Image (cartoon, rainbow, N blue to C red; front, top):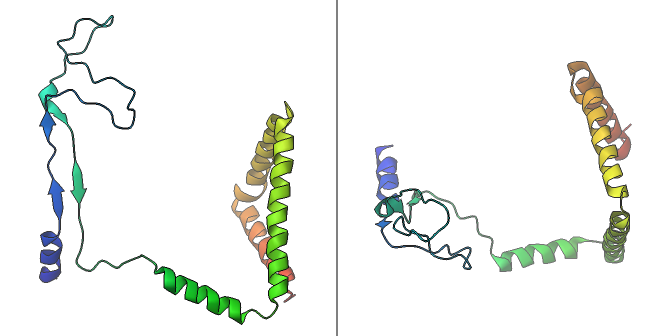
Length: 166
């Protein structure tokens, strides 16, 4: 235990913030001018007195352990697994047909949603209908313990019906 905590402490990195009195630019918004110092009096609004030498520029803390596991996936290994699974499929034409049908269905549904979205009041009305149904569902099935049990039994019955074990 002591060795593990010593190894952890040995790999912990802490970067102390630096302070600067220089005006800085925001790198995410390059169109903004540098920050005004408290000595600028040309602006039309009063500036708050801020000590420029106390502004932190960087704070980074990194802690790691010597027992870390890598979560990266090797691309070659991924393609090998996919090739093995594809070779194990018996009806390749059926899989391709279902995959193509799914792509066409997603494309058609996006066209349908775009058409419905272009009608002026229809999206807001459908949003209200969805919120109303969500409220009813929560009240009917999720609010009370007995109705949650009823919902669980209904879901289990539906699973059995779909799986064909009923």
